[in-house]
Length: 246
Ligand code: APR
Image (cartoon, rainbow, N blue to C red; front, side):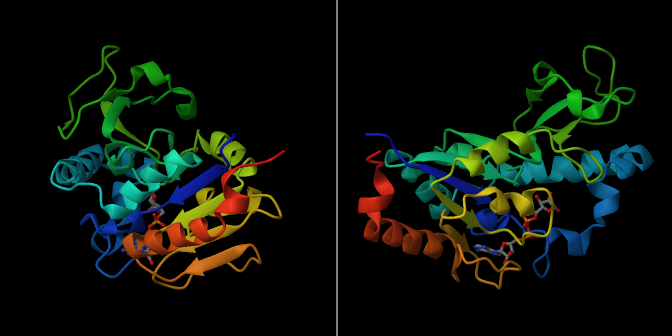
């Protein structure tokens, strides 16, 4: 019996209950740092040391938190659905919760790669990317080719290499779930538009969402509570959601 395709787009809100700050809530990351200084390619050329410190701090914090019930519930859906997680988050909590198909649109906090000052940045080769766990990198930490190591993060002003892969997944989705994103940052924020005209879209967020679309049902809850409600909706519709008789 072929499992239905479920695409789950997540943002910082899915990790909020694990204790990781979001970006745009009160006391969020962007209230304490200027985005252009710590998360943009221009910031890297202006002051790479400041940016390395910013990501070293967040990487160390990642070692002190763990997946919450929402991450675990999303991973658990793989029993009954063909799940693709498309996340804007750079934490590894979906992996640690057990999700097996994850597209990191904005990179991965535990990974680093040689900076690529002179070529087209979005064609870096994946084999030069490696995982340093919760470690640190500093100015002078060089890759084998002598280039400065940088976080494997997509900064503002850089291309989003995995967006095509994400669009393909959304186009094939039978159901789409969006958890914990303010839908302010493109191209991630526009992904839901690629879902089919009859594809139901559920959004879990305790606040208002800036989109109006007849396919959308807003579950106005925090991620852990919202996932319980989403599971109940799936169960109530399981007969037509679970398997395709075609
Ligand atoms: N459960 C669910 N949603 C929550 C929770 C929670 N406990 N707490 C907050 N939220 C919601 C907020 O209401 C908001 O809609 O999560 C969303 C967080 O929005 P942002 O802080 O803007 O985070 P995100 O949408 O992931 O940002 C997108 O912006 O700065 C860049 O690259 C960065 O990937 C990030 C991108």
